[in-house]
Image 1 (tube, helix red, strand yellow):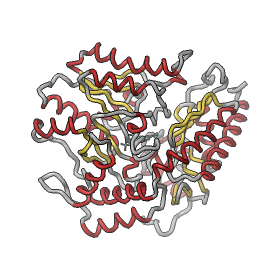
Image 2: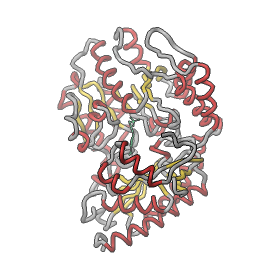
Image 3: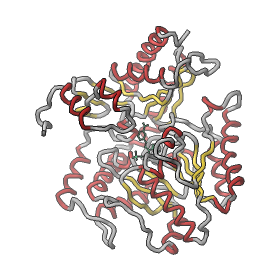
Image 4: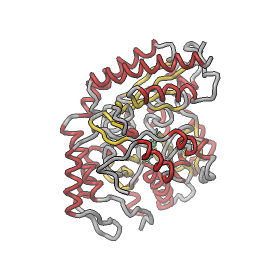
Length: 464
Ligand code: PXG
């Protein structure tokens, strides 16, 4: 059935969706009872559903639509490339203009010591590449025992077997027999949730030094790398105290291990610089990238590789028996190039740093006065609100984790705002093009929905 031209009623779409479509990260039984919300089009920072509702997309899709919806330049670039060369691979000693141009472009915007890229189609694939590349690198350098990758609890690196193993979500590990061997997890720098009475700076140092302790426990000769997101996104926008990253960098500099900064969310302007590593002054050896690389218009991802690793790898690794049919897909590369051009031509990153981020920070901070909010934090254009029934104690609700978050998210959805919840933390990551008046709208709606959530929590006896 092709109903793209003439859309059937919402109910019919929902029925068909329930009959044939298994959704990611979804309890299908629960969804099918309720019916999915059908998003039919989008423009700028707004989504429209099949019932004609307009929603402000506070999540930029899934942290990816950095340049906003409806950008004709990307559409036209993809169309031109489809006409010219819709597909060819990069496996058997061939290349093509869009992948060459994009690689050169990425080398120019990446930190100075990074000049190579290996392509994938999703952040998960990029992180699977990371695991194999890092282990094969050390083996090629004559150190095959350096296999262990240290990651973080509650980190998110994707959903494939290796990427979910790097991730520190225990609920994911429980499904499908993860993690794979030789991956360990240390505690995250989540001050609000785990810092107790400690000063944030002191807490940041303490959590960073867990890396040193873990390297000592395992033995430096067995550790290949440490991987972390500059800001933990899916884990609930965990913005580390300023003391955290410099200490991690010191440890990595002193030890023979690679530093991997997962830039899938932070990359391409989200924190007010090209990369989260620029914002935090980190010098990583590898950077997985995805999402904002094409603003989600087409799937494309990659691993940016430092000169140190690339040189050793090229010299010693021989054939790297790894790659995807669509590594460096020409149409995705053309879309990514057009996307990067928009980011540059419209000075979107300066706009985040100098205008949108400070404006959001000021408005968002005011939400901390709301009776339901224990902490309101932002960095660049990501933000989080911690819901609590007791601000002073940062106490959890007397209900299973996520109950209050879900209540709040539902009110947001029903009132024209997409704001996600991770447990009882509300999070946002709007498109970088968001204007100040759209930020006003976002924060105004968030406040209204906090009021509605508070009333419902009181009704249910969860807030006294
Ligand atoms: N690394 C990071 C830091 C991510 O946030 C991935 C890797 C995996 O990317 P792919 O393209 O394979 O999904 C991600 C993805 C959420 C949510 O609900 C977050 C992601 C994906 C899906 C949902 O916050 N991040």
